[in-house]
Image 1: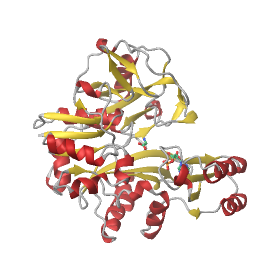
Image 2 (image 1 turned 45 degrees about the vertical axis):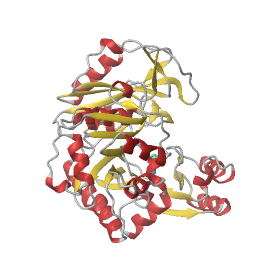
Image 3 (image 1 turned 45 degrees about the horizontal axis):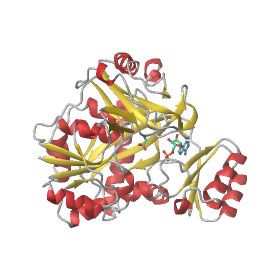
Image 4 (image 1 turned 30 degrees about the vertical axis):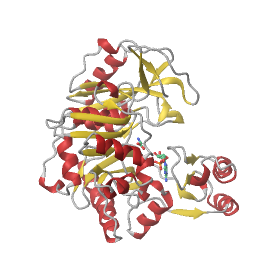
Length: 423
Ligand code: AMP
Ligand code: GLY
């Protein structure tokens, strides 16, 4: 079979890698892909939002199934466009993807279906938003309604910070129309975990829990990033808590959407805050997380293509999905300056000294392949991912490999997965 993966980051490299191990895969395409992905898949430079061009590629290459990485094409209706043209694709429809595309929709949905989440209010006027902040005090959380590349959430420790967040989103319109409406919500204190499931609209199969490290500096300090690393499983999501997350969050979400006439198929990600032993939803993502997918794909011990087919054909309940019993970790290597300005085009060395196998892989996030060299082409450059019998072994293996890689301005956190050891 032939498969197409849409996207071009570390998550997509991990998805391509997972697919490449499938017995029935003959060829993989990736649009647009990146330097590292081009070693496993044919990268075709088509914009992820050009649905007609993507469908043309699927037609001319006789591609059997497509899987979507990023949220923007999902929210713009890529799944609806593929289904209309009779092509198999995995992911939620435009309506189902509103769970991520509109934070106001997600919160109103959770309120209507009694899904635990922080209390909130919606504002369209910056004057009323400011009044509310002065009334509530800090800490408080301000969220732009629409997609803002992970930057639209501000956790304000002081009233001044909260007021400047209003200014940024609603007056300066830093995120454009995504800030036409905002949410102001209570700040929850607790431990954060990422919980993802496969679903065909009826059956729900959990993936192992994971935790990503969003801040740029060790000790979870400094600016928020797209994610500096992740590990799986996390001891924070105990089996009991995982069951609660299915019963109180995932099941009512999938069933609630179905009752509203919307079938949710694909991957559903809940960012959860565990407060006093109970899970609360911080956000929904209608896709695989990045960088959580990197360790999760390495833990998978079943054929990924078969899972995708069972999702598409709505027979997830008929297959068994197995996971390796140890731990996995992904250490992101970034360009210094990220998440602010950084330079591109530095040659990466040392990749050949790493012996990759099913338990050790270097997933490329922002690289190009130029004249026989991999060069940096993004803020997050690589995600070194390793499996071990336990988190300590996985960490050592990943960091040993990280130490072999060199490029000008290379930066990474040294404490990924540390928490799982100290807990
Ligand atoms: P989101 O993009 O909605 O996941 O938000 C980004 C980050 O902001 C989350 O990963 C949390 O660390 C934090 N956050 C979001 N909502 C809340 C909340 N209600 N209380 C505390 N922290 C939050
Ligand atoms: N790692 C968080 C996300 O993918 O949104």
